[in-house]
Image 1 (cartoon, rainbow over the protein chains, first blue to last red):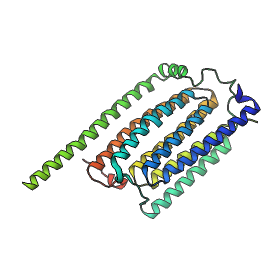
Image 2: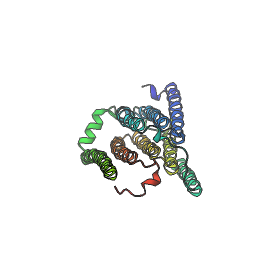
Image 3: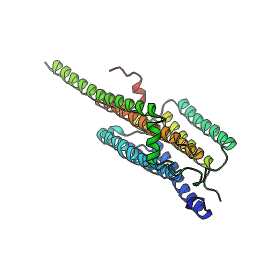
Image 4: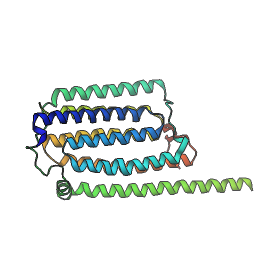
Length: 192
Length: 102
């Protein structure tokens, strides 16, 4: 395989650096844009560059699921809601109290420094080479086998979570319609 | 020359997680808060998949796929709440969600 020759590793590093830079850049864009449409588009780029990193980690099925489910279905729902809200969705940096903002920034810096120190102290070493992981690693076949044997309970619980979320979405939507009807009835009473 | 090691992937994962966390803490718009939450979840997913590759064990990928399913569920409920807020003509500001009474 290409990945454990010296030339192959240079190629892997080039792809890794490009994907990591795209990942960090789009991540910062998502948090800093005031137009949520731009944020959502940046998040789609972020998910795409993460899928490239997953491919480098030989997680082919997760990369495909990431593109289909996340960058496809979930983000389309986001974009529909942002389009539905229109100008109301604009999100300027109103900010809370200034000490909240300072505390948030300090907490972020603290987590970053903490974890980076922990990683540099203990997470050395290189990944297993292509030859050392089994050929089926990350394939749909392997994922399906794990889901239906070792992780059957997690699989079933996931389906219940999705069902509850679907019911919750319907309840929230219909609740909003009922309050609109109530508001209309109240204004009719006021007029009468 | 070895390829990128586990520490390189964990560094990216940490940066993504912290970026998302700062967004959740700083931004007032619930839409941006939800998008930042997605970044936090993806940072955790990248760490899970990097460790799965490190140990040559598929369990981390199973965990990552479960996280994706939970993220989809969370987006459905979160966007439902945001649409409900918009229909009640509330400002889209997380501070207005201090009570979830109808």
